[in-house]
Length: 217
Image (cartoon, rainbow, N blue to C red; front, side, top):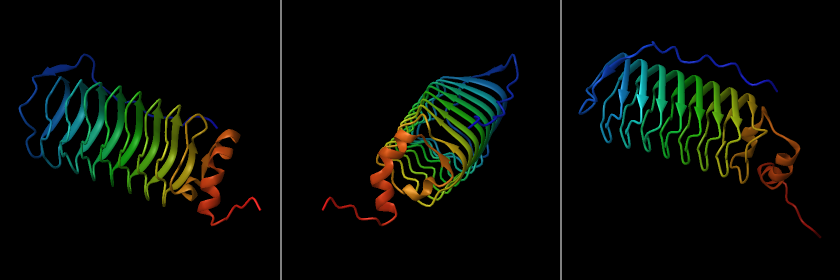
């Protein structure tokens, strides 16, 4: 299975500098800037738009930036644990080495996204639409993809232990190099590509999902 082609962020070079703001204002628009070590933990705002922005080591822990727009954005390092981006649109993002435990991406649209070496345990992707997304060496333990749509999504060397795929629809999803133990909603993997060893690992969940009772006598 050929890895999905992903359009990379289009970031201006060189980028201008912006001093970290004390808080996020409603309907804030930031364009063509680099933001270093900004602290927006716990801030709340709707309809925030970031265009051609590079974040370096940001702290957005527990922030609520719902229904926003993120285009051509790079995030390197930092803390985004519990960040709530419900209903947002994310396009052409590169995310590397970020702690995003418990991030809420429910009902979001994610297109042309690369996420590398990032902690995404307990992440919420419920009802999200993912297209041309690549997860590389990410921890997705207990991640919730319930009722999400995944098209051209690659999970490369990720840990998806106990992830929930209940009600998911998939097209061209590659799981072959990742850990897929104790998967919930196993029927939601229809449309994914796995390897033989993964198939053996998933037999108990598959039997349970199909209502098959297994007995030794």
